[in-house]
Amino acid sequence: MAELSERDVAGARAGGGVAASGGAGPASDGLPGRVAAFVAEHVVPHEGLLDAGGPRADAVLRELQERARRAGLWALPLPAEWGGQGLCLERYAAFAEVEGASDHGPAVLGSAPLLDVLMLRAHGTVRIREEYLTGLVAGDLRTCYAMTEPDVPGTDPFLTATRATREPDGSWRLTGRKWFTSGAGGADLVTVLARTDGAPPDRDGLSLFLVPTASPGFRLVRELPVLGASGQWEIAFDGVRVPADHLVGARGAALAVAGERLQLGRTLRCLRWLGQAQRAFDLMAARAVTRTGSRGPLSSQQLVQRHVFESLLALRTTRPLVHEAVARLATGEDAHVEVGLAKVAAARTLQQVVDAAIQVHGAAGLGPDTALPALLRTGRAARILDGPDESHITSVARRVLGGYV
Ligand SMILES: Cc1cc2nc3c(=O)[nH]c(=O)nc-3n(C[C@H](O)[C@H](O)[C@H](O)COP(=O)(O)OP(=O)(O)OC[C@H]3O[C@@H](n4cnc5c(N)ncnc54)[C@H](O)[C@@H]3O)c2cc1C
Image: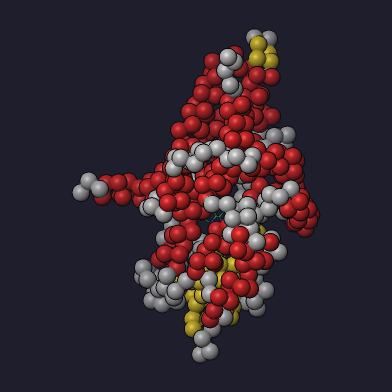
């Protein structure tokens, strides 16, 4: 029997679903295969345009979202009660990898607001739920999430300088600056971390607010291109008035709510980074077997074979770590160690595999004809966003060592 190539294995995975370590069987409805085909056919060809941002990117995004709706692939993991298709985390995890093989997949397929929708469903007031959730799931409203600030370390939220003060009528007045807020440029709503009580570095006294970006005093300060790509913004709140019922979670409960969101958010990112690493691997392997010199194809060179081996090893050892995090989150178990391990491993794997793929492509790997430069950018940012490697390494090691005391 012929041996399966890694591409066949990846294809089978996309078509048959990835068994989470919790034991979820193959998806019977072929969703992963349909999502993979949709991303390849409709998203990948438009990546350059979508990366550039601006009104044209916005129009293309809306057109692609419409195609996803027509294909029956819109908002698959979003709650059914608000208009999504209600797939549970483990079923979503079976194709989040192929959906995320393009950075734009989740936005085109309507999965991007999942974290915000789950957070607002669990912690939003009745008004927030009734006013925004249907629009967010439908893709009519867009939201972003602002924790990180320019003047204090993002790894130390206790130093948050953005301040919310209570007005006599019960509303709040928000003042401060945030940066690297993904998607703020086109957002209708922003969730903001602000200090409501005490002073930095108190561990208590931080709260979350949902702020409509049309509010007087909200300002887009500037766009912050990341290695040439659009999408990140610096924003300011100059005395923005926020209604009392736009507090998300209890006053002072921000870090508990944010922690819940971050665990799931990091895990979903890991799945997407795996999809992108697999994509880089496929590009590398295809190049190695087709680029031929006087001594034969690149694939016959042992040092190229080493790139292939090391990349495959990274992919195959990271994937189970990510699915272990998914399985623990799905059952509601504590997943700090699993998510920390998965996050560091997936970010490293993406960077390593993309770097190897670029090396095997030579100059073409740095040029405009493949997705590799964009994947490299994502891989580099992956080691910083959602907490840099060092934070996760320290936090996992402390927790594990705590078990030996
Ligand atoms: C592409 C991109 C998108 C982002 N999107 C968002 C977003 O949507 N919303 C948002 O709020 N933020 C966002 N961020 C910000 C991101 O979450 C922060 O950059 C990250 O949390 C680190 O914070 P910082 O940049 O302030 O780094 P700092 O906290 O200043 O840390 C700088 C460096 O110090 C070192 N360091 C920090 N802590 C430790 C430690 N415990 N041990 C050893 N070394 C340490 C690490 O090397 C770290 O990289 C985004 C960032 C990027 C690059």
